[in-house]
Length: 170
Image (cartoon, rainbow, N blue to C red; front, side, top):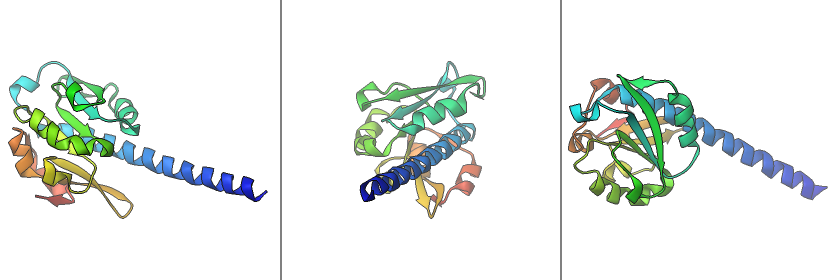
């Protein structure tokens, strides 16, 4: 009987963790979409589809697909692409690097150096490694920090509203 009770408790806890992760992924998807509306990309990035790439796996992919279905950035239709490794990453407007792929951030920064790609991460200290925007949990709330220097380095101009909304700005 005790074994069954332990299994049920553990199953409940994992369900809570899973729900929390889904909630975070949903909030990240909403943030990412809103970031896309507050950033000015070069003219060469204003044709074709608006590509949001995800390096790694997780709930964020399905949440982005769900949240952006039927939405546009300007006249561009939003397309979400998932990449398993840095070598797969193509031209994209936004690249979200999942926590488990942050170890490849240096490689991504080098690969995207001459491209106007907004790199977004979710690991403490990632702004110092080249991310332009990094998600952080403050208490139980999802917030973000932004690096103007990193954004500028990628040729990205963003609205001052983004800086005002940031938890921290560097």
